[in-house]
Amino acid sequence: MTGQHSMAKYLFSFLVLLFLVQPVFAQDSDRDLLTELAWLQGRWERVTDNTNRTAFEEWEVQNQILVGRGVTIQGTDTVFVEKLSILMKDDQLYYVADVNPNTEPTFFKITEYSEKGFISENPDHDFPKKIEYRLSGNGQLTATISGDGQSIPFVFRKQ
Image 1: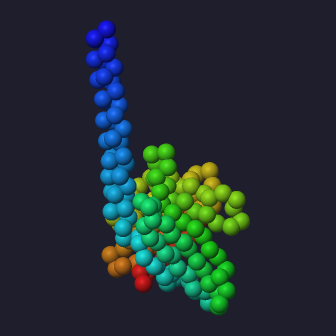
Image 2 (image 1 turned 60 degrees about the vertical axis):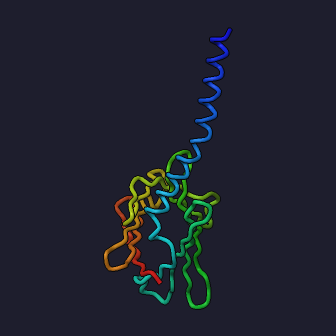
Image 3 (image 1 turned 180 degrees about the vertical axis):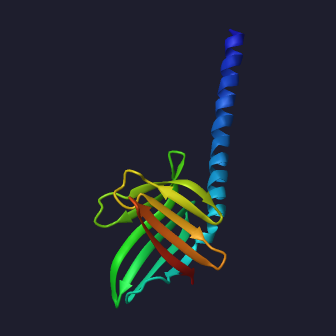
């Protein structure tokens, strides 16, 4: 009986320790993500729009998630808004775009990221299937959406 009691006590102690340590690993992972992608924070004005539109993206950290929004304005009218985020879900990193008229946000799995950019993909989405953000040495950010042989770059400068 004492052998079973000791084993149960050991197992209980192990489970308690595992429970206490797990959030530390999760927080470190979140911190690494925020450190790697910290350059994205702030307001980015699009510089490649040849129409009479103004477009920008804004990003900030909220509760260990990067939260953003993309806005396009024509004259005094807001003609396009998308809610954006970069977050962990089911131990995977995702770029999430919530755009009208879609009823649900679209998740793009981040397959590569660093302090200079990231690539996110969703091969099942109609368009885009891939979204890539790259920070260049001259302070510009290029966001490229692509899929099915089509590629559209958007160049931004931090404000």
